[in-house]
Structure formats: C-alpha cells, structure tokens
Image 1 (cartoon, rainbow, N blue to C red):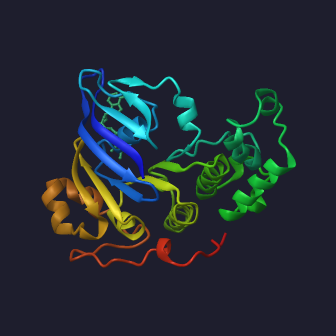
Image 2: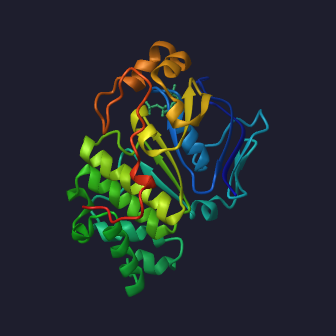
Length: 287
Ligand SMILES: Nc1ncnc2c1ncn2[C@@H]1O[C@H](COP(=O)(O)OP(=O)(O)OP(=O)(O)O)[C@@H](O)[C@H]1O
C-alpha cells in the first residue's frame, strides 16, 4: 500500500525562489527512505509539504496524499488536515519539545488528538496513557528521564523523546527533518537506531532527511536525492557511489561526501554497505 504519494509538486516562495520542481514520489508502507541533498536543495521544504505545513504552487495541478487521504491539492491544504496529521509523527532538527514540561508530559502530548480538551489542558492522563508513555520512553532508552524537565535532556535524549511522542501518537508515518544534524556521532547512532527500530517493529513508514550520505546508506534501503529542488536520484542507497554523487551534484557532492566521520566514514571507492541494525532480529535498544 502506498503511504505517501506526491504528484507534480512545485513550490515557489514569495521571494520568487523556486524550491521544488515537479516532484513525483511514491513511498510504500513500511519503507525507510532517506532524503539527501546539499544545503538548500529542498529537503525541509519537501518534508513540510508532506506534513501539510506548507502548500505547493496553485498554478500547477499537483497533490500529496498520505495513506490515500489528500494532504493538499492544487496549492490548498486539505480541510481535514488535523485528522491526517494525527497519524504522522514529526521529528525536527531543533527538538520540538516544551522545555519547561516534564519529559513524560511532552511524550503524552502524542495522545492529545485522542483525549478530551479539558483533560489535556489539566494534563490529566489515565493510568493506561501514562503506562503507554513510560513504555515508549523505555523503548527509546530514556525511561529514567521520565520526570525530568525536557530542558534538562541532552540533544540526543530530546530527539529520542520526540520519537517516543510519535510512538505514543500511534504514528504510522514519521517525517524526520535532519534529526541528527546537531548531534554527536554516538547520539546520532542511537537516534537512527531507534528510527530503524520503529520502522522495523511497528511497520512505520519513515522518511528522514540527512546531510550525510553514509548514514543514508547505513540505515535506509532507498534514497531520494534532491538537487536545487529536483529529484535527481531515487533508488537503492547502496548504488550511491561517490562517482555517481559527483555526477549528480558536481562540486556540491563534497557537501554530502565530506562531512567527516559521522557514524561511519565513506571512502572514495564503491561504498561498503554496513549492515544496518534495521535488518537485525528485533532487539532492545540500549540506553
Ligand atoms: N520561507 C522561505 N522563503 C523563501 N525561501 C525559502 C524559504 N524556506 C526555504 N527557502 C529556500 O528554499 C530552498 C530550499 O530550502 P530548504 O530549507 O528546503 O533546503 P534544505 O535542503 O532543507 O537545506 P538545509 O539542509 O540547509 O536545511 C533554499 O534555497 C531556501 O533558501
């Protein structure tokens, strides 16, 4: 079944900047797809359109559907977008948690579309909801941080809490916009391991934008590469050799090839595919 369907998406900002050019994309349920590209290539813009946070150009007939439901069409966001978003989890580079609230409350924000408004305002959650929140925190390996304020967590822990919130939400699609861009290699690895775990164990479709092609290869069987807002490659991540990347990106290839040793390093030869934890038998993720 198709999880995300994008047809002829174009985006021109008011400044006149054309950020997306005729993007067509089909992502199947349960895929883990990397979105790569140099800075400014349109990764965030595309993810925001998928989430219905931005609308494409109305001058071109284009649309986006998630699980068959229209997110936007011909430049207009669907009127029932809140309902569609309830099934979509977002993980952003800048950990979008409420700093002053405890981690568990942030995580339980994932249930807000299900609980009555008065209960959410009072932050009154049932024992079952609390257990579900704690369970999600256990799965991402930070249950011990449950009652801490979100602001006291490290960047990697905040990102894991954001993923726990998507779990509690019961999201069947996770859109992660450069979730490891601000993290050290070890925290990056944990966050990517957890995204892969959610993909594998919950059959959750994951689309993750990354600066590092080596991380894409390690975790995502499929990569969509953007260049100046156009899809220039859509296929197996393992086929993304440095030579191909140079062909696609020219000098800009260095942007995504020379980011140092972020999780694994990439040599200037056919890329060695590092077996991904995504394809190991289910196992607990260590904290
Ligand atoms: N609100 C905006 N108004 C005008 N131009 C914008 C706006 N947002 C993004 N852009 C432009 O659209 C293009 C794509 O930006 P986008 O943020 O999607 O790229 P990106 O690939 O996510 O980059 P990065 O990796 O640096 O986050 C860039 O040229 C950017 O300057």
